[in-house]
Image 1 (tube, rainbow, N blue to C red):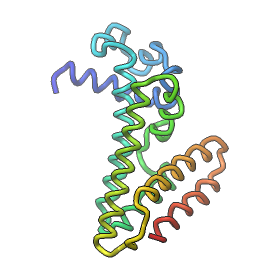
Image 2: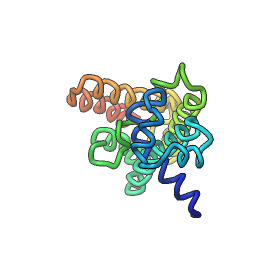
Image 3: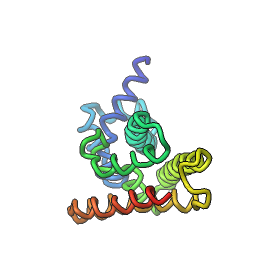
Length: 194
């Protein structure tokens, strides 16, 4: 990495938690300079505008989550065990290096659906990739005889994602961790019933 690439990476790493906690609209240039210790000129010398920084920060935060999931899945062999990683990680996300502020998909989708087309598209793409990953695991499990042949693959994948994201939202909003445990048991049952 050259110096410019290192500086861009530094800016992204330092501002990513701010964007994830405060959102695009809530993050000011002052927040970015405070997080990085850099001047406005240094930030905008490396990024064209706030949009570019926000998009790179979202990508960084989402990569953190997907890396955790991939690392945990690599410890398991069966498709069922790999799907259960979602239950394990999202039930205990405090034990993993999740981005500050929680799930970047949920945070970004909630804020950017009506306010920022670029972030909205990035979040939508993230959901689509997540759905595709779950779908591929279920289809492989069916092929290997691990799961029933009549499993509604896409419906199951979408239900898992919606339940997990709803769980995060309700737990974060209410502060009631027993909600998280109860809702994640629903995801576990969904996987067990495959």
